[in-house]
Length: 154
Length: 154
Image (cartoon, each protein chain N blue to C red):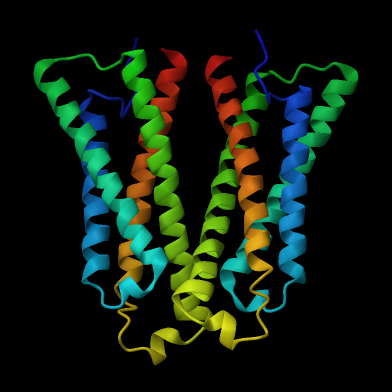
């Protein structure tokens, strides 16, 4: 069977996983360096969700590296089924976290003047962190579709 | 080929579409009857997204009814591919809208005391509308997975 772009054990799959790790880590880094994030539940949830994504993507990146190094075949039905469930659950949580943070950010900067009246909030940092979270979710959603495609066709 | 649960042209598919329509309409109805919703962008986006879902699900429910009434087979690759793209786009938009509204609602009721200080906001109505939106998204996500499964196996 031809292995599609981004499938486990391929260089493209490894690049996708490394990209997910980098964007999630950047999102956590920017959010935790912004002052006032801990007063908003949505921003704390974003950090938790991105942390989970870093762990998951880093684990799968290591597995991809191992498969590439020792020419292992990861296209086993049980392995791919496990990957697909994990990918979909974490992708849904990441999208939920990014969207709830974006909703709060729009409220802060557009619907109210909280950003102007509260100098303790780093309102210029939050959108950067949320953008990284969306980029990370986008890469994870590509992996998720590829996995679902694989599990349907194996 | 055996038609799975919730596939187009089956009674289970029609029930899923009618459920999506009902929950989306209920979400719009509760949100528009709550005072102060128009001051929050996330709540306005929820109404727009649920409106789009009502239109989409109602159209597909009519098609399902037509297929059931005249015993038509909708398991054509082009038709199912169109359904799968529409379903996934609208499911992603619905989840984004529900999550951004939920993020704002948690901010109003837990992180700040906006709900207590601003009597113009119907803070008891917003969670009901958001719950209906999540229920509607959940039913749409079932349809989306069935469609993706069908398009991968046709």
